[in-house]
Amino acid sequence: MAEDNTAGPNPLTLRPARPADAAAVAGIHVRSWQGAYRGLMPDDYLDALRPEDRMARYDFAAIDPWAPATVVALEGGIIRGFATTGRDRSGSDTETGELMALYVDPPAWGTGIGRRLIAAARQRLTEAGCTEAVLWVLDGNTRAERFYRRDGWHADGRRQQEEVWGVSVVEVAYRRTL
Image 1 (cartoon, rainbow, N blue to C red):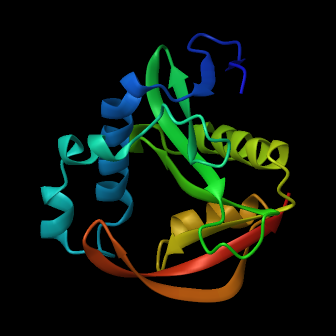
Image 2 (tube, rainbow, N blue to C red):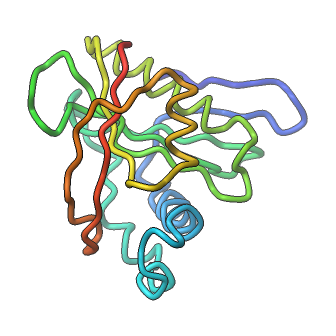
């Protein structure tokens, strides 16, 4: 993905994540969870999340075209959000990709960064030959559900009990044509 710039006083730039971005991405991931999942996951669990514990999970150096790939959104040189895409983890077919993660730093919610990131994620999946995409939303996360529905996603009827960062949750599948 080439860099994507938008003019303005603090232009938003999208670019592939680099290994040096791991700390910033981990921080956004943790803060987003703490903001979005309050009331859906145990408070003591959310309060104990630390970016340092998550950093090692990010590998932004993979060159396999089907390895998960992350794009970051920078505003004024600061990472404000990220989206990760890859092959559908269910392995159902090769024409279905997955939006594995899309998180924006809570102070930047509602600023359009999420819309830019999801458009970039759809573009990457399309360029990889995908004709459909899936994602999983934490059951009860109405903010995320509204966001995805506005972007053309729909619940496809699947639900799963999943272990996510050590906590058992229920997730709902969403799907869209690319």
